[in-house]
Image (cartoon, rainbow, N blue to C red; front, side, top):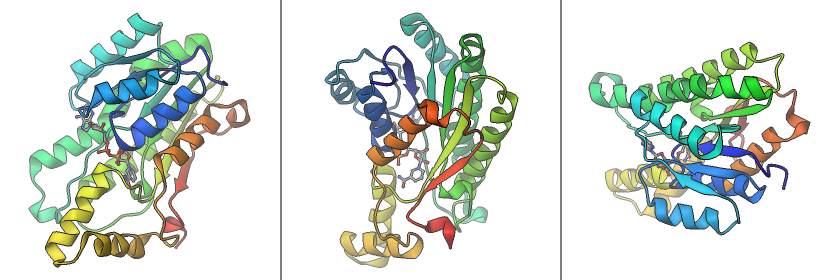
Length: 257
Ligand code: NAD
């Protein structure tokens, strides 16, 4: 139980990757602050079953004022945040000339700016305790692009840049900042893209899933939220004390091509 007594706040942790990371960190004894718009009671029960303290805050990651309230809530309930996982994210697929302006703004706010706000609010406490971990869930799209995902690719490249800059500012402290760059993970966010692909192509959902993997991910396997959680646990361990500012791909070979 390497994280016993620590507090981890995971944004967007009511489903998918965020929930998987929260569960894995809780499995190492961390108390958890959950966030997100999904079924938080189910997420809370799953974490509480691991024997740690768990709280939920429903802040909208597109709203800086609500993010400030969430960070104050974590301070009040647990005395601060030791492990900050910036995971909340949304997607929208359209060519740049068709991209709805409000979708662009929402993706930049939720997938990028929210990590700036949580980080700026978490860093003072981490510095004071001289220990902390910031783990930004970027994407293979933080390293390479795909057509029709301009906002997502811009936000994910942006969060890789934020990761590096923040890591450098904290380089002589016990606070590390790193990014995880998953390829395809079968979560609600990706299921929607598979369903859209099946509907548009007039093919089965199973075939759309095979096509989606075949296009980008040479392993032809989805990464699991639990595997990303185990990487987060490693990044929290003393073995990773000097891992700083990396963008670590877990993408079945996607970005090796
Ligand atoms: P998901 O849809 O299962 O989870 C997203 C989470 O973010 C949910 O809890 C949702 O409620 C929350 N959320 C959405 N908008 C929010 C807002 N405004 N405020 C607060 N919470 C909000 O998706 P996922 O696939 O688990 O994605 C998690 C992260 O992983 C995202 O940043 C995504 O870009 C990234 N990612 C996913 C994949 C993949 O293949 N699934 C690959 C690379 C990166």
